[in-house]
Amino acid sequence: MRIGELTDVRAVRPEAVAEAVARRVRPPSLPDRPLIIAADHPARGALAAGGDPVAMADRGDLLERLCTALERPGVDGVLGAPDVIEDLALLGVLDGRLAIGSMNRGGLAGSVFEIDDRFTAYDADAIAASRLDGGKMLLRIDDGDPATARTLEACGRAVTGLAGHRLLAIVEPFVAHRAEGRLRNLLTPEAMIRAVSVASGLGATSAYTWLKVPAVPDMERVAAATTLPLLLLGGDIGDDPRPVLDGWRRALRLPGVRGLVAGRSLLYPPDGDVRGAVDAAAELL
Image (tube, rainbow, N blue to C red; front, side, top):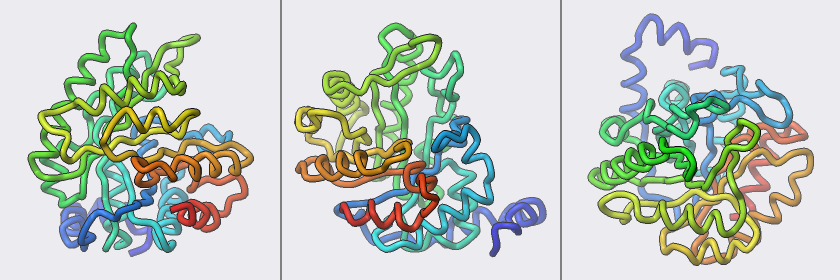
């Protein structure tokens, strides 16, 4: 199927979506050092990449970039909201790849309710029913916003629910605060240590929980705050990817850091070379 045919299929034969998801060939196991491409940003209204505020707005272009990334050696899977996962399943590019469902997309980027990150996409039962390999959730902890408590509770339930299906739970935790009306993540070692410590204790069991964290200074101290496996996240890297790659390389040497989840930095690299950006990341692993 071609990207241009997706809308026709969705309009005329919507049952094809479930059929495509059901026939996906799942990988036999979780790779030891996974590289996962993140594409769940649009569902939270976060469309910017590389200085372009609407870089991710063209769905056909995004899917082309994802297909390019998924065909590269060393790429193990994709992380996305239901619409993106289902588009990729219809295109037939998920066989043998991990498919991680993004769960809480309700804290829209830039909104006054951003910290109240409601579960508006997958829940644990839907992830299991769709034969996905796990779920991912975002957790921002703002001591000045009481809505943090609701997100904490919802993430705890999601971790428990995924563990009940023996599915991977990926928690992306931050300590955050509002500055000039915008929610900002604190990327100091101390803030990340606190975020990791809180996220590690979510749910009735941590047996299936992995944490997704940025590579920050003194990463050794952050990794030492938990025994849970860590995945590095890759945000927007600006015009020069070398400092970010160096930071990933150093962090990946730590025993607790087991892989990389990157989206915009690989899909929208400064030079436009998706293959080259993905291959450079894969080489680190």
